[in-house]
Image (cartoon, rainbow, N blue to C red; front, side):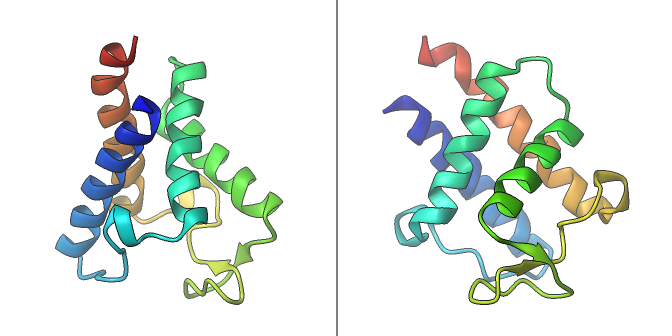
Length: 116
């Protein structure tokens, strides 16, 4: 499925971006838990279905997905407690977190034309 391959590329770019900022918690795509892979796939589908979406729309979509799955704001990311520090309005995110939304959208936009 090409959507999944685009999600894998975006995930790996995000993983490396995180590593460059000292966050080594992101597993490679093949080792990522199903919920994490599905979140990236959902992000690709969102951008496919909303080609004019900007990075804040992407973040809001991600937040809705997380909150629907029972996640809430927490100062640290904890998959067991389902807390995440990025569950805040886009404007409140640190610059490097906002950059991840730009990166994801750019990768999806670059690769989607090849999915048709």
